[in-house]
Image 1 (cartoon, rainbow, N blue to C red):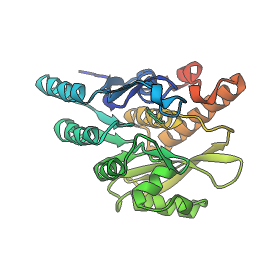
Image 2 (cartoon, rainbow, N blue to C red; image 1 turned 180 degrees about the horizontal axis):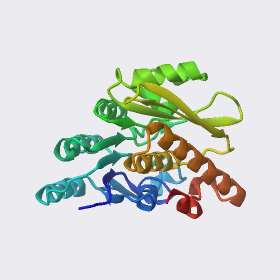
Image 3 (cartoon, rainbow, N blue to C red; image 1 turned 180 degrees about the vertical axis):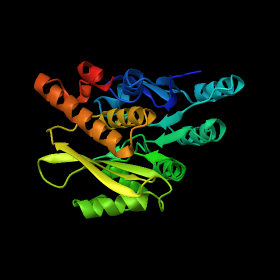
Image 4 (cartoon, rainbow, N blue to C red; image 1 turned 120 degrees about the horizontal axis):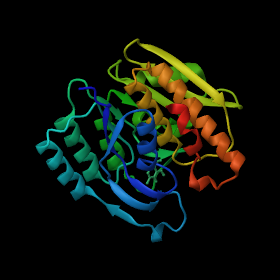
Length: 279
Ligand code: PXL
C-alpha cells in the first residue's frame, strides 16, 4: 500500500482571514499529504477582525470528542498530528488525549503553540491555556513558535527577545529541552531589511537560519502558512533546515504578492496563485 502521508489537523475553521484549516488543507494537499481536519471551532473570521462582539465562535469540543471515538473504532492512524489555534482549556486536554491515542512510533507530532504575536497574547487565550499548551508541547517532535510564543514558553518577558543570531541560537537550544525536540522560531530578524526563521534540528544538534527580504505589513495567518509548508516538506523527507528555508521563501513570496495586489491586511496573504510552486 502506497498511501499519501496522513495528517490529523487540529485547528479552527475561520471564514475570513486565511488562517488555520483554510490554509492547512490546500497547502498539505498540494504537497501530497492527506489533511484530515479535526476542527476545534468554527469562527466567522479570525480574532483580529473588528466587531469581536459580533463574531461567531462555535466551540466544537463535543464534536472533537465524538470524532476521536469514531476514529478509534475505525483504527485510523496518522503519519502526523498537527495542532494550531485551540479554543479552550478543555480542547488542549483533548489534544493530549488525541496524542496518547493516535500517536504511533513513526507519527510526527508538530505542535504550533499558537498563543499570540507581537508581544501580545490572543484575546481568547488565558494564562492557564498558555501553561497547559506549554506542558503539552514538551511532547512534540517539532514546535514552531514565533518570538512572542517562544518568550512565553521560556517564561521570558517579550523585551528579552533576542535580536542577534547568538541569542536566537540560545533560545532554540533552550526550547529544544536538551535536544528532545526540534524547534523552529519564526519572525527572527537581525538586520532591518531581513526576516526569517531559525531552526534547531534534534537529529543533527545543529542550528540553521533561513532569511529573506522583509516585506512591510504584519499579516495574520502567516504562522499557519509557515507551519503547513514546513510540515508538507518534512512529510516529503526534507531536512528541517530545507523545509524551514522553503517555508520562509514561500511566506515571503505570498506577502510580496499580497502587497503588490494591495488587499487588506486582515484578509491574510494571497497564497492561492503560488500553490503550484509547492507541487
Ligand atoms: O493564525 C493564528 C490564528 C488562528 N485561528 C484564529 C486566530 C488566529 C490568530 O489571530 O484568531 C481563529
